[in-house]
Length: 474
Image 1 (cartoon, rainbow, N blue to C red):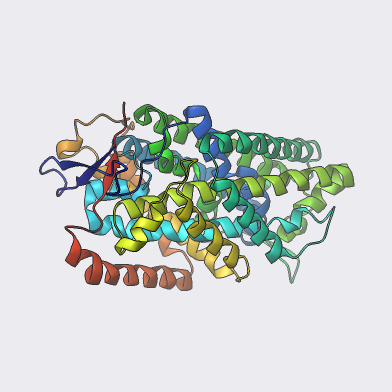
Image 2: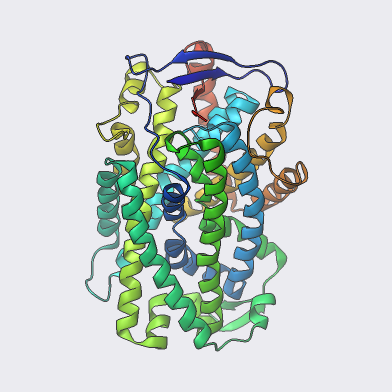
């Protein structure tokens, strides 16, 4: 059973609850509650996929930030603690498969919820193929395969897995996750054991000019500009909120899952990055971003092959979990009637395993096709989208203790409202330092979204885009 909530202006009156979506055909069937903190952490940590970020996203960061990558990741991790507090409070206040848009909509109104849904959709659609495209690079020790076809194959496999039972997927992804943590641990051990660079390169970072082979200190502006990429590398811990409707006792489980995932994921990502920075034979080698060659130089071809296979499995694992979690956002948009009714009915269909199967296909199949598109610009756009998403969530956290929400049952963050205010200021600053092209593309997408709201959703607000919250049974 679900509870439909049409939010009032913040701080006014209690939302009106209407019983709907009981499986009788009035809307999508409810998702099954089947996972706790352990299963949720395994799934969400696999979505954060620290080893995939380490071996797919971090190499590109070394090209732009040189030895400043570790510092950027540490600063981003500190910021993400504040973000995790915001997600934990909002995710337990508003447990919904809709994630950010359900939380923001309940607190700030449906128009803001729609814009947040569109921003989240950018991340939903682009991040999985970006990660999947890294698969071929880590299979070179065994087989040479086209990068685009390998990425598409990973996305198709992830889609098929996403159609199965969520609890089974939690344990499968847990096994894969263990392998990627082992690979990251091996790299960390080898990096520290073969340290070549002084520790000062981490606190006074430099960037190498590939043309002149000279290095220059990194300015604060360059470091801040790289923060979007660092936030992107750590992004994923917050997606625990997408599983809120499938978690047992979500009022407690969601916050614990978010915080555990960030802590564990940050360690698995940052410690090996520091080790690679210290153990690389030169700054030029770091800038090249070929981590397997660095590992091979440390410990030989066999170890590099083992690490490469573990990373390939980590990427597959990430694809599976991203498709699972992102499909829940599409499912929730159908339950909240964001689309014409035939589309809502299709996106809301749940198979015998309890998975929203058409929503899963909608996420997975386009992801496979995107593997054949040049994604350099889309990576920049995704970095902007992640920063914008965190910005709006931090703003929503300021509304979480107003009016009827003040006394509602939820996990409450320490140092409120200081943490949300600091996050808002920093995210605005980060966004001002991003590529103009990425900002223009993101802004253009939001303009189109606003037009859809004005021309279709707003005139039909009695029947469309009505945010619905599932009963949490707690």
